[in-house]
Each structure stands twice: as structure tokens, then as C-alpha cells.
Image 1 (cartoon, one colour):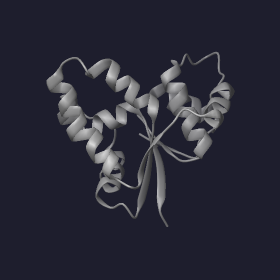
Image 2 (spheres, helix red, strand yellow):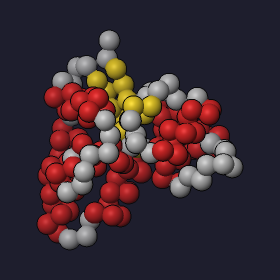
Image 3 (spheres, helix red, strand yellow):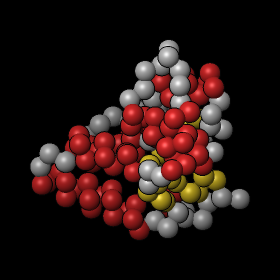
Image 4 (cartoon, helix red, strand yellow):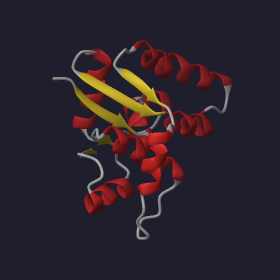
Length: 147
């Protein structure tokens, strides 16, 4: 049976660490899941909320060389993979977004949209974000967190 996961920004940046010149922030297991999705389209589905790309474009599209590298080494493989979707911000995601409430945890809206996408799909979320991990421990809104 095909397994399915939602991937957040830090996870995607970790997987493509050499493009961003960043150290990996997720576990070997999480990296393995993402890698397997790119190499074996029949065993794993990935959903990447569109807000992930907004964050990447805001922080990383600083010059033409970096932008071209992101397009060729990240966007092209994602577009080519039939088992990887870019999840749009839709009504169901917004409905889940509004359910995320905990005065003890201060989320930014990007993280709330990512968590809401995972909630809507009811797929495990690959993330190293401590706020999301803490929120899910308290409220169990997604089946699992792979960090």
C-alpha cells in the first residue's frame, strides 16, 4: 500500500540542503522517505503545501543564479514526479487553519497553513518545527509527525 506524507519548508530545504547550503534539520528516516518518493513513484505520495514555495521564494530567490538553481534542481524534479503534489490553499485547508488554536503556542501563518494541510489530508507531517510537534502532542490533529 502506498504511504502518504505532507512535507514542510524545513524538510524540503533539508532534503535539498546542497542547493540551499544548509545543514539537514530532519532525521535520516525523514530524509529517506522524501528520497524514496523521488525515486520510487509507486510507494510514497508527497503533498507539499503551496505556502512552502512562497517561503522559499521570499527567502531564497535573491539573485538569478540561485533562482535558476532552485528551478532546475528542485522545481523540475517535483513537477516531474507524478506522486508529488503541490497542495493549493483551498477551502478545506482554510477550515482546518481556523481550528488551530492554542494560546500557549505562537504559530506564524505559514506553519498553520502547513499543519492545516496535513490535518485536512490526515497524512503524517514531515517537520522539525518544534511548535508543530508540540501542538500535535497536545491536540493529536495529524496521525504522526516524522521529524
